[in-house]
Length: 305
Image (cartoon, rainbow, N blue to C red; front, side):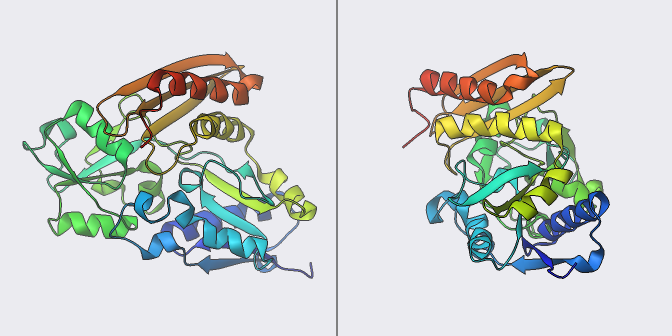
């Protein structure tokens, strides 16, 4: 092959592991070899601003906009994203329609003393930058205080060990990839903590007009994850969700049926709206749209400022 395929990724250790996984899948499913594919590390604004909530400095797009710009400029051919970090609406001229098999979507707790959430001392401090996680924590432990902590997994664990907080909540998928499983104090079921939309899913994006790359990506798409991703993302699209939207959504496929549950909190976390539905698997997009509309109606826009 003459032309090299360039995969663009955030520069964090975890993001580069995701990009490597995408590269390996492409090699496995096509006649391309290692030398045909280059992984390029790209610094994003979300990686540079670590002391402020994303909602205050530009939202979810901070993790994807720089990478998407390189895609639009033909500097890369494929962009690798953690789906949970992507804005609800697709960027003009780009296409996100390939998803690798979903990793574990559950949330985990790490504490210095291996205590579980219910065992933490009164008014303990948990580090998180997510409104969803904060409000979910307070359902179980209203006394808990949440403190803004951002940065990659290594940074957050380091801050915990330095005593900046008593515990942190992270996604299980990232912990597994980075071999930090020994640090885990508690694993929450998806019923206890409904995860972020698309949590645990690696999404691959290309230019809409780049048919050759789209054909390559089609070969590595995981069909079940594709359906789950679109069902969950449609909830977010209907709600026009952004970084301030405290929403969790999780889907499961059993046989020819797909079940989707979602919860939405009001802007101050005092109100919770929940919906769960099952439909035929080929109606996965419609299911997400329906649940989004129900939550929007129930909440009466109390989730927006």
